[in-house]
Image 1 (cartoon, rainbow, N blue to C red):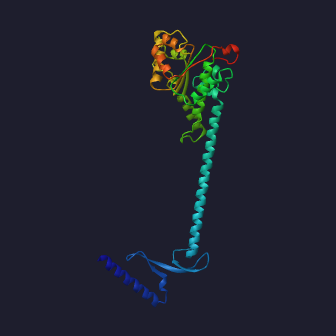
Image 2 (cartoon, rainbow, N blue to C red):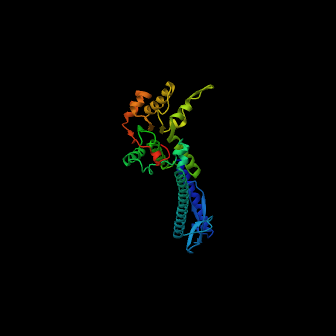
Image 3 (cartoon, rainbow, N blue to C red):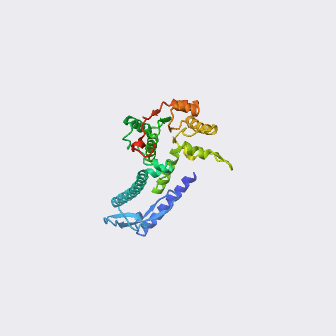
Length: 321
């Protein structure tokens, strides 16, 4: 009821205002009631369109009158300009992304080209840092092919057995190199926006993904000292996703040393972490020298490779094995 009365009052005021306008000889169309029964009355005016000159009726506060056709054209032009600006912003963002990707790829390429430095970072001694599966001409081709296949998808425990100088360490480091190249070649995370970010991530990826340690180095790191036990924690490389253990059972082990080496193998076996082991002994000798259970754990993966009895160092084929 109150709304109807308000509408009636608004109509009466509007009609009275129109009559006064006509009585004064003014065009009543210059006034346009808007906003509902209680809305404001916006004053209108007739003016030429600034684009085509056509007469239009617009509110008086409009400084650039436009007819419907010219207004539609202006809105279409503005829409196209906004689309063009969005496209430019998209192109700039894409160019920045590609530039960042090129920087990251250059970083990856530099790291791959400096693979000896990467191998040194994960614990490989300098004398073995040039080892590669692509340069094993004096080793059986089938053995090298098997090594490439295993490096592409390492699993379980790989045991490389043979006399000194047969190429065991050379092949083991070649496998480690191939695994590292695979890790480094994986796509970088979205958090990597600069080459520095890529370098940090790749370094962390290599450090957590691969490790190399010899039996002697491991026992030295774990050996108790007069100041207390230095073996409270294992070397960081032992926690890598892929670990190469060189010269396994190559020293005269005390009961403490046997327990330490057996514990390392047992821990990686229990966690199903891929591990490559080189040794001058076969599994029967490992069972006698270390522990029959450890020999059984190693044999379970059915990945025991025996190298031919040929000293490649004496032949001058490789520097060390």
